[in-house]
Amino acid sequence: MPEDQQSNWISLTLLWVACIFLAFIVGIFFSINSIFPTDVIRQGLSEMTQALDQSSSDSRHYLHPLRYPVSGVTIFNKEKAEPGVTIVTSYWRSAEKSFTGIRLIDMNGELLNEWEVHPEKVWPQSPHKDYAGDASIDPENYVHGTWLLEGGDIVFNIEYLGMVRMDSCGNIVWKLPLRTHHSVFRNEDGNFWVSGLHWQEVALEQYPHLRPPYVNESLVLVSPEGKVLRELFVLDALYQSDHIGLLAVGRTKYDVTHMNDVEELSSALADDFPMFEQGDLLVSLRNLNLIMVVDGKTEQIKWFFTHPLLRQHDPDFIAGGLISVYDNRDEYTENANVLGGSRILNIDPQTNEFVKVYPTSSDQPFYSQAGGKHQYLNNGNLLLTEPTAGRIIEVTPDGETVWSWQAEPWGALVPEVLEGTRYPVTMTTSCPQS
Image (cartoon, rainbow, N blue to C red; front, side, top):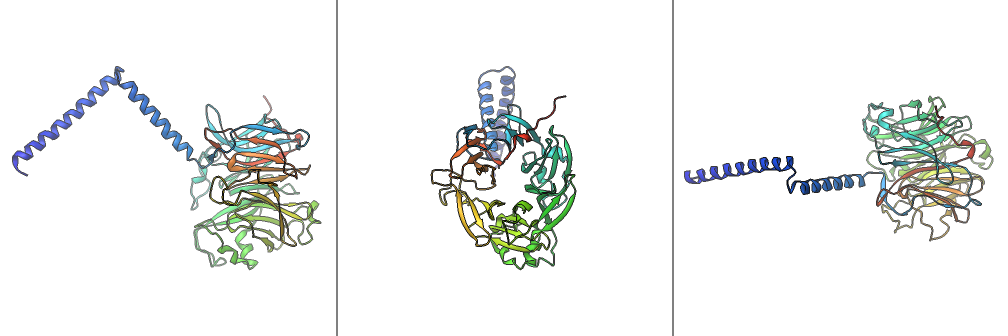
């Protein structure tokens, strides 16, 4: 570069630096003295920050596009609805905060009790030193699987973090540092069956087709005191029963089976199922589109069912020798415009024949891409949780909606509701006032 051009370039650079420095000094003077356009700039920055915060919150995993622009109890037919109280697990917010937690409401939607759940407070440090690390102590982790006990205690899972028992005031009675998830089922002995998870980080000879790391899921029996009494591994059942071909269906990178429910056949229903025995275990494996019954003694698979399930949840043994299942039919859309939505099926395990029991007509919207719970009530009605719609409904056998509760919208979004479970009025509980 010629000497005169180099001199000009240096002069221009110094001029730009001086201008920037002068602008900085003037900006400070304007800001301190609130001279125009300082307030306009501040307002613009504030609005931009709020917009970015809103955009960030809109992407949170538990918020979904609003489908029903209502909130609270919107339908209540006292003559046809099953009386009781309802446990609801969701995300809640007030002017001060938002949190995941459990609420107990009456038939009018009035709050009877509440358990706030803060994963990072239950376990300030993750008890797990595995492949997944500390991810589950995220404050936005959620409750998945609950059971309300007589006296007001509640047992629940913090998803993939651990199992917790709280009293009616939210005090921790015990916590189990096992990666429990999805479901809690209480058997006749008062123990709890729960879905468990272990990260398999080294190859195992008994699973020659699988390469680590991957999720190794289990059926875990837990005492009311929080002690592990028994553990059965899903992969053992599949390999030992010569059903390893099922593992080829829909596997993700790590999540081989995605177990989301385990329930035990009771003595009251055992006579309705001649091909099973009391103590046999009904299991749902979402990523294999599979439900199966595992022998409670030998741990061998006695029966399994796949077609036409698509990412199903919550199979139940029900009266009449049938197995009821929440068939999500996840089509990777928000509006169910391909397959038409989710449905409840009743399956005869002796013949593998099935019937759809809900919806009963095309004008009954019902769809959840993930999650899902259904409960047969004493009066024959069905209580249905529609998680990604943030809704719980009670329907009669002919499909009439006789009770409906909707989570409060967060603007154009709604927080998911992972569980709605009806209990007798006698299970009403609250925190005693000191």
